Length: 176
Figure (cartoon, rainbow, N blue to C red):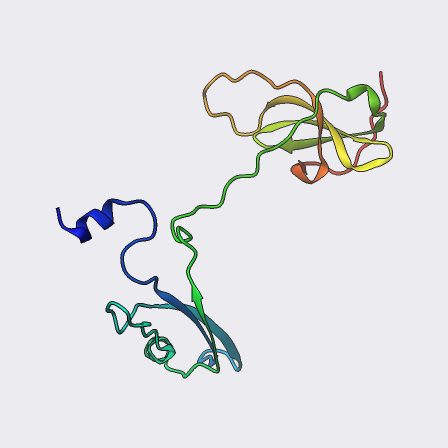
């Protein structure tokens, strides 16, 4: 096996130099509107002078030319050079995991107001907590969007108020 083939099988950086990112911005006249629009785009420039022992060439003029070819205007500002974060193109935003505190329920005193609400994939009732405007007590009554599968109801607990979506207006329930 050749040296280059062995180098490719090793973990670590890929062979060659990492491409450089240039961010170009310009102001474009809008044909339909009597106004202007800011256009910003990033361009990836690969090494134009590859070779052993050379520093490499990543000219911003290539990014500016691509910007002009695409938008028909010269960029007013060109920022860079930057390195693109590895895997940034393939990464997907992760869904925030919702937290329910079921351990310290006896520490809190509930408000009298009870509201219909949704927490994650569940609908239920939410009561505020006295002295803690950022927390709520949530009681689960069913799925918000039933999927056809039978799912057990989670036990009630304390949740962050920012994770609760209210489906009705304020109402005060008196205990019966």
